[in-house]
Length: 163
Image (cartoon, rainbow, N blue to C red; front, side, top):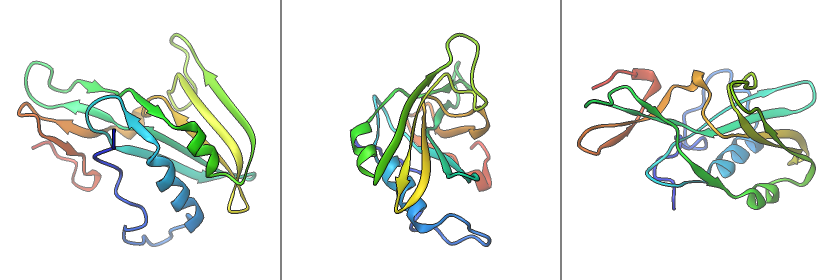
């Protein structure tokens, strides 16, 4: 099932002042986002990334959907999905480690996730750790809004107002 709503293409966005992400990382994020397949409905991929002393760390996730209107107004629904791990590994020149981390019950890691897969290796000669989160971090907020008439609209962070 194709993803109908992806985070705006990083390659086509306007450059921001102080942009520090190298082009190889932008391409990796874009190509990794394409590997998410929601079980149902539409989705929007979110990410966060930052450099560490050892590598670039990239976290990717499917954003939540917020219900607007009706008796379930305000409910936040995470989306179930499949992810093509084999194709992710093909994006790496070499893979040093693949790890699945699970935090059952009420315990969660610092991102609020209860399960994630991390792949550590190199891309375009640079060390990188890609982390696939099973749920969006609380700090991400909803990615889509679902209205009673069935319309589904992406949340625009620059003008985040409910209509």
